[in-house]
Image: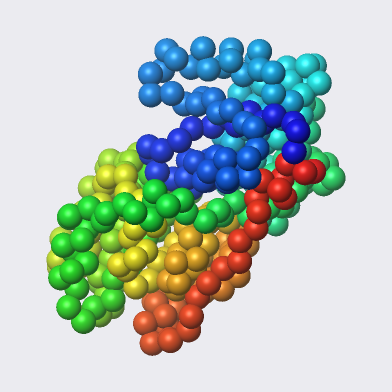
Amino acid sequence: MDEKIMLLGTLPPPIGGVTVHIRRLMGELKKEGVSFSFVDLRPPKVWSYGRSFLNVLKCDETIIHYQLNNWKESLILANVMRLRRKKFISTIHSFPVEYDKLNIVSKLLIRVADWGISCFVAPSETIKKRLIDAKIKEKKIKVIHTFLPPLNEELDKEIPEEVNSFIKNKGNRKVILANASKLYLNRDKEDVYGLDMCIEACKELENVKFIFVCPLIDDVKYFEQCLLKIKRYGIIERFLIYRRDVSMVCLFKAIDIFVRPTVTDSYGISVAEALYAGIPAIASDVCERAHGTILFRKKDLKDFKEKIRFSIESSCKYSIETVNYSKELYEI
């Protein structure tokens, strides 16, 4: 394609669905020979943000692709770009709250931001529906799953020693992996990423060990309660909470099952990633998931444990089809 693209977002660290997606998208664009630039809107040094923002406003690129869920930021950028006759694309990686539950200010921000945005990319039909509920015109929404195959540099990374030692000492047990971008409770006091469910499952299933990757702790009090519960249940030797950034790709080479017991989600890139690595993936039924995912009813511990047992006993092979993301998106 002849048009130049500017990607707006941030890169690892921290490692998360959005940051990994952006890094892989950049790798795909390079491979395809597409001309692009990247602006980090979450720079390590906070005072660098203003310079980054100005670089976007005075850009020469014709397509601006925004990847962060900040409606205030996208409102300003999108509408300035509309005045400059640029195409502004926004990938909505998550839309966790139903539109009706948003306050008046948030609803207004979405409506004004919508005016300047040429196209919304939704990772699933679930997010598309929420955008339509938010009064976004359906013709402006394109559903493209945001999973992209890992880069060679990710595949070459080593498993951290602490995690590797935990896995090697598994005996006859199966190692189950879960992850969270950060540990926190939502407004309904629910554990968003399901650390609580993993702890309960580990307590009741003697033939498993859990690794829960969570670099950021938003709710320290709740985290301490979880640690006390692990100790009280006597599963310290079978439950590892790893609090550093780590490439999930390298972990998939060594674990047996991946789980994503979230109470809300948009698609779950890590689920698709597990399937791509040939690992069974168990996830809550809160949204559309990658084909081949083993679903369980949201917050249903009994169903969650049954699906884990099924995965342990099953000999099914897992895989996932991938798409040329840049071609699907930028040829709109």
